[in-house]
Length: 317
Image (cartoon, rainbow, N blue to C red; front, top):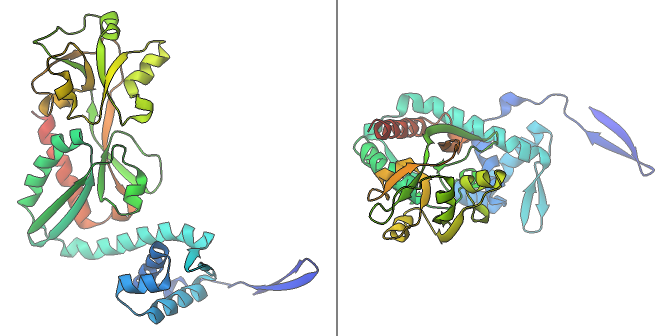
């Protein structure tokens, strides 16, 4: 079908396809499409896929004809996806993941599988979950390699960019391409050194005491500080520690307080006593998140189930 447009005193013909022949689409072509978007050049995509440059170019031309869109526009030495291509990429990634899952349903066998897994987790989550997770998974797989990265505040971009396969986070990302599962609720308590002081008696004692906070939190403030602010109160933070594991070192032998998840009594805070907060504070949640492209991936689904087993074993203690 051709449409005649009158634009700036000129007539322009625009060609539209009457119908997209979606049955002409195939998995290999869609993989090429995603790789070109990821790399940004035809040559780079060819190198990454191990095929010729002409094969990539031919595939892109084929997709242009089928979909009726240029898909890519040259921008200097690279090419940029069109708006349609960007919108299409998310759906294509999900479709390829589901196609892969169809094959893996019958092929995946833990005892015969080799898996390299990257998890984003802070030091508290790492100490609490990942040693047990590694031991449990390793004995069930033919080969298992676990790499833990520790960004202070993991983002959805880590998953989208395939820099990690799973992330353990204390927030719920409200974006459609990130899947999540609650691992456990986090009850917040006050840790202190019982050889130096007693638990805070009341709100005044809590606020008058020195506190240890975390430097990687946004504006150096956590959920407790935000809550106290709504009540017109403020705690006196004297030390901003770089991570959870260092808090114990700072707290030992002092009369300060550290407001932390109660489950830290199983990890870094085993030598300290703890008590309830002198005010009502809603429990937080620890979530496991992953990109939707892994939603139906059989090895990934199996690993997520293994993580849930580890969490259940910890909560039963």
